[in-house]
Length: 112
Length: 110
Image (cartoon, rainbow over all chains, first blue to last red; front, side, top):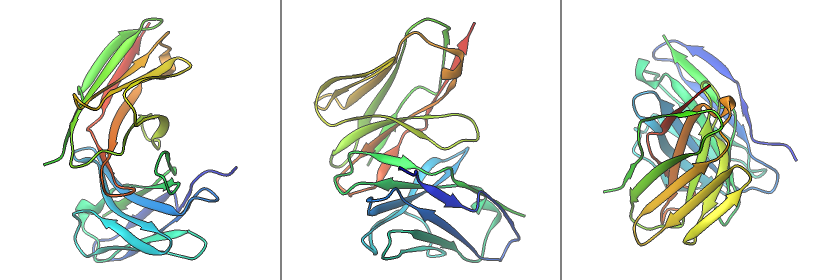
């Protein structure tokens, strides 16, 4: 059974640009959650998608958005990048009962 | 508010036992997760507790007391490869949203 796949693994972007990250969950998992991890703030919840609908949202500005497709793959977009957006972005794949949550390898975004 | 506390750092000796504590205050409770994260890598799922009591899985065990808002992760027969950050996370009443503690950096020394 394949795990959670995130692409790309590494990205370097310039301030003001926008970026799209992708996450393919474990087969059969319909929930995909996104997290931002930084040394100072730890892991912080961005949003969750379930069956193509945003179910929950964290306290991040509107520059952070996402979507989910019918095959449960999810994308996260960050527009007008700022230096402070440099972080490891992780997605987690869950079953409907949320009794397990598995993370992908993450995308390390560096904004210069 | 929602708060999860765990010690910042711990040090233990190879072959020993270590207990990492986690206390939480959250609005709603649907389960508590423990993850292991090595530097530069993604968190790896270790355990999930929703009922009070001890769940044992090989060298790792996790305990939960919902009435006390308390959990611990017990690591036995420590190995050097167990040096990592251990994250406690609570699932509240918002579906897939996990609230994470800051993590406990465990150093295992020979």
